[in-house]
Picture 1 (cartoon, each protein chain N blue to C red):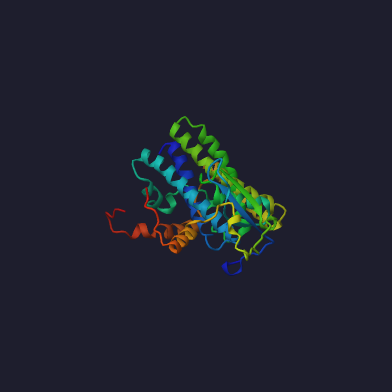
Picture 2 (picture 1 turned 90 degrees about the horizontal axis):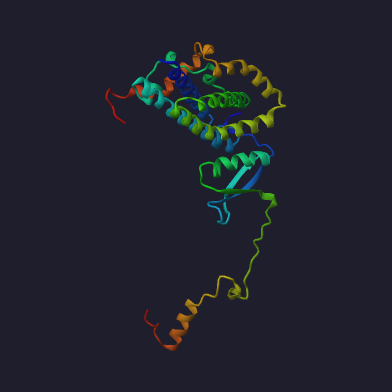
Amino acid sequence: MGAAGRATPSSLIYEVFRQERKGQPFQHAGSVEAADDHFADVYAREQYGRRGESSGLWIVPRSAVTEIHDFVDELNRNYHRVDGYPLKEKLKEARERAGTAAPRDR
Amino acid sequence: MNEQVRQLLEIADDELILGWRDSEWTGIAPLLEEDVAFSSIAQNEIGHARALYELAARELGTTADELAFDRSPEEYLCAPIVELRLMDWERTIARHYLYEEADAVRLERLKQSDDPEIAGLAAKIDREEAYHRIHAQMWFDRLQAEPRFTAALEDLRPQAAALLDSSQRNGHTPELTTLWEEMTVVRRSQPAGTKW
């Protein structure tokens, strides 16, 4: 088997999440393609762990991940978001309407 | 050359030549993940060779590069099994498994050395070899019932004995000369006195 015909075994994609230091969140690092959980473990260690770059790995078969993409925000309810209500633009518009300048930084 | 230096050179030569052979899989392994894994193993083995050559070079009053590249093929002390150009996967994995098995035994011995530098280096190398062993074991577990793999293991096993027995390291395969010519071509082409 040469470069032209790589084996296409019944392999799976595993998503790999790594934790850089203890206590930090696990973040998506990439993926590995492996024949089974054992191969995924070895390849993930090899590519994401063995040089001291991670303190932990999560290795998850992609099939175990539930994906959701269909988000629409037709009513512009972004003020419900937990990261807060972006006031800056709205404040600027209001000042322009009122004809007043922004207060100087103190 | 005393026994200890000879032993360091035997292992260094094994690691250099096997690292070179493993690197031949870069880009053409049966699985993309194995391009990564085998290239990484190759790089580790050549790194171990360098560290071992440095220890030997100090005893011999030379340098690691001179030991790695300036000897003639017949002066290398590697075991013939590492010289073989094995471009089929089952034989590559069989050699990898047999090599790691023997390497673990010899590293354990080196870790007991009276020389703290040798013992320390062996412990350091062993920490990296642990990853090679889990890689070899993973393939062994996967292929152990495959007739092509078991035939390759049986075929290569007698040659693996030389890895742990200096008296069986006599002579080389013609494949070493071909490899040596390629491996040293840049080194040999440099004008005298070149400093890198």
